[in-house]
Length: 249
Image (cartoon, rainbow, N blue to C red; front, side):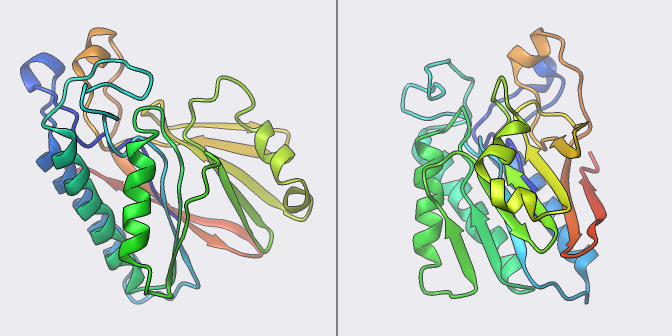
């Protein structure tokens, strides 16, 4: 399971203002640096399947007004068309890298910044692989997804739910939850790593590789470690390894 939460491609951050620079080119460099680390860790190991999960907010804005879906103004690197094209190339490139190792499934998870353009982005990627049988997509409009493989049940959501961050999986996947031994929800949104265990359910908030915006810096949010986390699962024995592809700089 390779997760990409909160890439925020198109975010413009200036080091003197936010503590660190960030733009489309930096996002692309970090993204492929982390995926290359995943590929190197895999080496000659064999996998039955890879879940490649963008956990929402791949794009920083959702329209030509340079705002989020709900209308919050953002500092942007460029125009939406450029952000969209560059990020689409990144997603397609990442899938191509992983598809050389094992069949890849991509569940669409909606974010709060790019609910419209994020959906269009994944649909465009789906069309690019429409003739490749080893690459499959779940682009249904439900913002949450889940899959069970043997004893393992994983649920994915963006993480902006104010309540029910763990309960939704039990409610929406009743049969699979009852037939699983290991159940986890993986989310992004808060841009930092946190793990909560509740009634046998583990909720993992995953970090981002994006820099802080000027607003986040103004609010004094801590500068969290930037890492892309991958999970190695065994169908019967659950989670075996967690790989941290942490940025070198």
